[in-house]
Length: 456
Ligand SMILES: NC(=O)c1ccc[n+]([C@@H]2O[C@H](COP(=O)([O-])OP(=O)(O)OC[C@H]3O[C@@H](n4cnc5c(N)ncnc54)[C@H](O)[C@@H]3O)[C@@H](O)[C@H]2O)c1
Ligand SMILES: O=c1ccn([C@@H]2O[C@H](COP(=O)(O)OP(=O)(O)O[C@H]3O[C@H](CO)[C@@H](O)[C@H](O)[C@H]3O)[C@@H](O)[C@H]2O)c(=O)[nH]1
Image (cartoon, protein in one colour):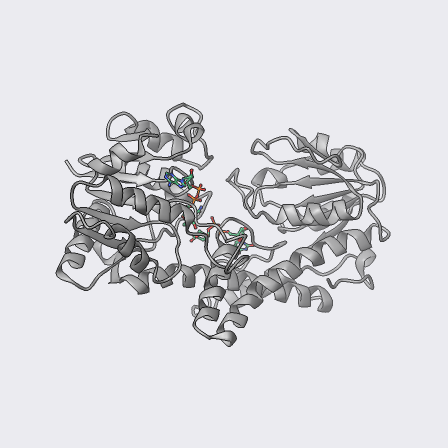
């Protein structure tokens, strides 16, 4: 029986391995992590991450051919294929701080693999890493040459949170990069056989290592660029009376542009886009490609501009101050159907409002950890969050926000009552009829907001 071990039981390692276990009953899959609470949670009925459909997949295979363990070394030593799916955050200190990927976790995993291995292994880069990382990993793996053959593959993950199971069941493509040697090609074939259990073969793309590594950064850069492009348009829409949803629809009908990923928003968030673009920028700079680096940097600048612009809209609409005013935040996760709040735009919006001395009351359908910030309260109900508030900010596009009783909410708020819709989820006209003053990203402006400063 082929044994797969995945180092890192996070948002990628957990769901990806659960799906491999489900689709490949003849493969034994063990997910290992240094975090005992994470592994304990995977082994309980309360999984450590919220992802639609995940519970069901895990239930079907846990204890059969899917296991979660903190015994990292044992399972790595026994595995034929080792996936490394550890976190690769942005470096916060030292060379490349604020841009380069921090490969500390990756390096320590690679050293451990080298130390405990007694048999040949395929080592798979699942984490998102800078292009050329495989070369460094190869050096680490072979530094204490014990005669073991390690083949490194790059197999970046393209799942999005909130739709991870759907994406894993039916991926647009699976990308496998390897060395162009016979050993490298054999390793590619072995991993292709795993995915081929459920992914049509024409969707499994095999490339060289560097193309696979770079394609992951490129894909995220292109996706984020679309959002910054439509968000840049949203500012112009507000200035001109155009409606960004109509503009998105109109341009998305062009098959060369396509309709997806054109939703204007308060800005993109999540653990990947900003980190991966910064990483790309750093790599470009290291190769002396300043113009290319600046081009991609602009995607992040527009994203920051969009968040600041949103906060400025709120403050300027509410008589240029939110000091002492209660502002309700509906949605804190970086997108719907996830409990993940990493790099969520809501953090920057809240910081901006707190900077102007607002009192914040947050409701998100997913449980939130309590906060120690004095001006911030996390509550369990949208009606509680909005009671006595001067304004409401909708920052995550949770479906339930469309169904709230806004008349009831309006009645419980201070007047004038404002709604700032950062996701275009509510029916602005309906809310205006109730009496709200509504600001919606990229939409024709309420009379109240006209002639007020719009820019960051
Ligand atoms: N989150 C996503 O949607 C997503 C999608 C595609 C790719 N990625 C990439 O995948 C990688 C993992 O992301 P994530 O969101 O799953 O991260 P995560 O933080 O949720 O999980 C990483 C896990 O690795 C563990 N870990 C770190 N060092 C370890 C070690 N030496 N031994 C054992 N365990 C160790 C951590 O304890 C943690 O549980 C990142 O490179 C990320 O960029 C993420
Ligand atoms: O039209 C859109 C689409 C998305 N977003 C925002 O963009 C962010 C990222 O969304 P999404 O890409 O759906 O979620 P992620 O889980 O961050 O997934 C991205 O990042 C992953 C990690 O690398 C990749 O694997 C995925 O392919 C890539 O979509 C979120 O804040 C969204 O609200 C918008 O504002 N407008």
